[in-house]
Length: 146
Image (cartoon, rainbow, N blue to C red; front, side):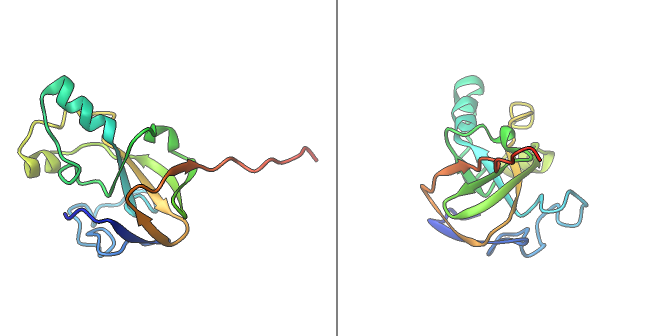
């Protein structure tokens, strides 16, 4: 995995160049919810907590999620629409840690990442994601009673 300053998000597909967009990811052949592998997100605060609580340094590249955010409770976005920059996303489900991740990084991260492994989301509108783009939760449209 390579850190990028920007990447194209493709609605209904994923991130250009990503292993799951090209269907070559480790779990590509396993069934999951529609859109659940289009983009994955991770909280920077979790990286801080791993160091403080467990003495484990895990870089933003090692956690293997596509986007790292700060100041956003990702699991609160399940079922919600939100934007990163101009790209509209929808939270699908949590992204729990797995044995494969632990084997790849060679660090005992499985247990410390339980319930904080990130978020899987679907991409609803195409566009460019850039480092520093804000995360903004969409406010549900107001609907008057009939």
